[in-house]
Image (tube, rainbow, N blue to C red):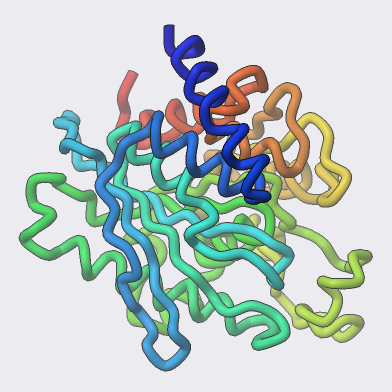
Length: 299
């Protein structure tokens, strides 16, 4: 029934977007609005000097878990030179539909900044999000004081660095070991030196790469539980060098880590499976939901 409903919604929406020349992300977001209702608080500013804000996605109605409501901070990708939080409305809505609270922040991009400024932006966003959720108006949602860091592509790198290297959150007075409950990375570049993508080289000061600037550099330290999701076919971020190597190093150090390949997906559609449009692909949401349940010891 759900697939039939989705098919009818998509049939109605697609012609309108073809005629208007709108992007595929706009189409994905439009369908998600029909399929995944959510309460959204938009443009919550966390850095007025740099005009940075985040959007907060809340379940349409609070779901009564047997535990605190999971809080996910999702960081979008785009090779550190493109992307905008509103483009990932479909991700926020999908996470909220599971009963989670999801926050999607913007961060500064190249050429405005290079490494490591976007990591400081991420840390500032995390601090603002955790402070916001302490307000009494969210009491009915019962938000967890811990967070789950999540990201796709370049965003998975940012989220992984905030998760694994304590200095970024420490810079804003937070302790990653007590704050971060888990990490979910989708098609992340965790080990990309030397960089072969021309657009990305200046972001990391190629060829003078900063030391200890990749998540894999910290994988042998104690880390929170990690779910590494990889597509079946990735022509942009080499899976064996990144997801597989990162996973293996985490496991070798005794960390709780899982590696899942999502059937039928590539670098983009791995994230696209958050949308109901790609119901015929493998699911990224299923392992994510299972992983988050496991963090709260749900069987």
